[in-house]
Each structure stands twice: as structure tokens, then as C-alpha cells.
Length: 179
Image (tube, rainbow, N blue to C red):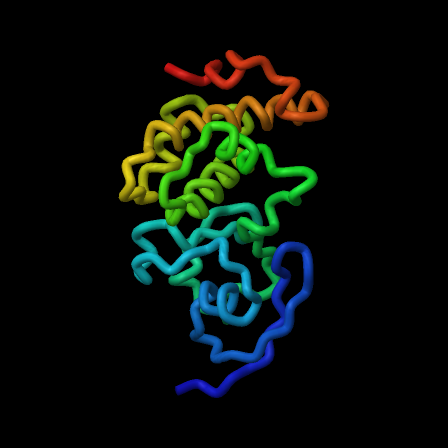
């Protein structure tokens, strides 16, 4: 067993100090030490996506990332995407589309969609499906999740063009990326 080491992590734009073994999965630190419960423990193998977080804007599976690999990179969890007063466009879209059933997969779906928008400001249907295809939803909410991802594209586009809120978007705007 490796002795604990003190780490300083940049999580949700705050510097957090934790003491843990360098091999400890990032997920355990986020949930157990920092009380950030957006990322979920699903499979523990990086297969399901429930534990996804953004590291420097890219989606990664936090159950497979050892603490030593994080270094000074910026980690963003579901809790750090937006605020209750100003939701991230993806969070707003998932709420507006009621894209949840049990909610266990939502963290991964939202993080994957945010990561997609970080690298592609105007993804088409194929890009959306590709970004979400390795995230498992056992409740069968896939159609609602896809609709929420499409709406998130529209919300992000509106935000980039300085519309103030998702309410400023016409109901048909979210359908623009539909096939």
C-alpha cells in the first residue's frame, strides 16, 4: 500500500487539498473527500460513464483516473458546470426536456454533452450520437437524452449570440440539428 500524499486539486475553480494514496481513483476523492456527488460509481471500470467529469474541458471517467494523474489540471464536475441562478446550457436543456428517469446516468450524459460542445460548437446529429454512445442508460430514456442534447446545442448557440436566457429560444430552435 502506498503512503498518503498531500495533493492540491483544482476542482470547480477552487483549490482543494486532500491527503490520499496517489493511486486513489479521482472519483473516490470527489465523492468521499469533497462531497461532490454528481459523478456516480457505476461499474468501476470506465465502461458506463456515470463517473464522467471534465478534465481541462474533456470528458474522462473518474473511476479510472488515479489521483497522481490529475496534477494541476482543471477538474469540473456536474456541480461546477453552472449555478442555480445561471445553469449551464446543457443542464438547462436536460431539465427542459425532462431527460431523466432514475437519474443515475445523467451526470455522464450531461458531462459528455458539455465536452462535445467544448470541442464542437455546432455538432450535428451524428456527432451527438457518437458523443453519447458509450454512456449507458438502463431506464431507456435515450430519446429524451438525445432531445436534450439537441436543445443544449441550440441553447449554447443562443448563449454565444448573446441571448440572455434559454427562454429567448423559439420552441423549434432545438430541432435545428435533428436529422
